[in-house]
Image (cartoon, rainbow, N blue to C red; front, side, top):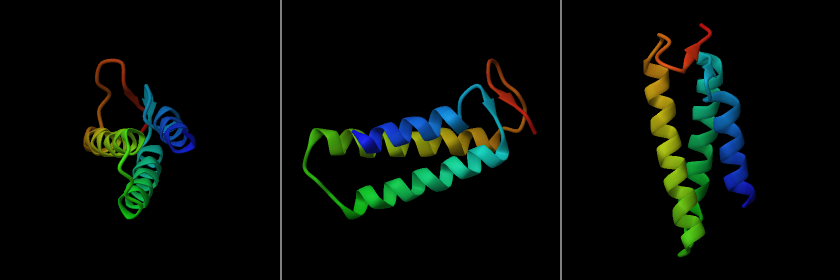
Length: 79
């Protein structure tokens, strides 16, 4: 549960409505670190599978956001 809260915190602090390239880059680094940790410690459980899926999805969201420098819809880029 602590890992899931950490992922939620990273995403809400850096990838929410107002975004910056620095915050997105930080979030990507943190999520890649979490993904590596998850891959190294395979567990056969539903919680593990959910955490792994959240990490993969988060990384894809962050990469997509880094590729867009303009503000779109409700998402605003500060730089």
